[in-house]
Picture (cartoon, helix red, strand yellow):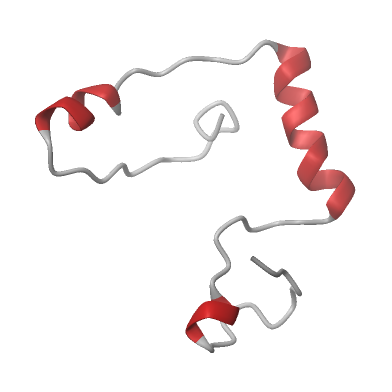
Length: 67
């Protein structure tokens, strides 16, 4: 989905099988893609990996997201 959005993905893995599986790309149907994009749009969420609360940091002061 990230590639389908036009973003670059840098996968990380240490095992050969996982490295190979990271190359298996697929594309969602437009209706499924739009539905997934709508989840973040409706909630106003912009980042899915905001760990500020866990790390006691404030990298993203403009967003209030809890994990």
